[in-house]
Length: 111
Length: 113
Image: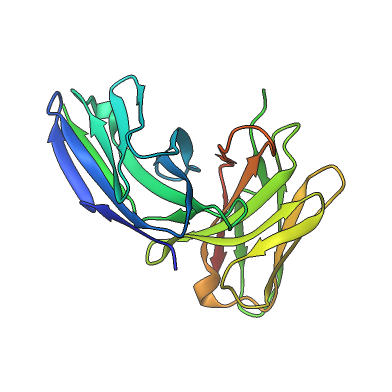
């Protein structure tokens, strides 16, 4: 059974204080690993897709990396508007478009 | 380019009733997936439709069903509602054959009293 575990569950940062969110996964034949951002009361917003170990992708203050067992979302010099829940999900090669999600990390950035 | 739209956005029902939720995918997207999001269980996959056929189904009871129309719009139905069905129901669409990104709608907030 595919499993995704995210840590920490919640993270408080001061504005400008860089940190990393972790996503550990077990999946039978990884097809893709996805990062989403979700604001309260809204649907998840797509951030990145990673396909193979060693791959990295960047967008503004966010950088996602992937190994064979985990992915990291690095946040550099965060701003209050980066406050949100960050979700990690995996797609197995034999599961169509089904995504298995982790529980998320709730990030709060204080000015 | 319009995103995924879901209607209604909010719904209040009582136990035992049934409900139908609607999802219109991004134009050109033929794959639609449904997810249930609750504080305790997080985001859980319900089912996926492609070209009017159910391709995949999650571990939910038969009270949860869905369908897809020829224009790719999808509906999901929950019969005999229970209190535990209170959740945010999210729809995601994907352009099959292109990248793997799935784009989510704003969700329908269902409250069962």
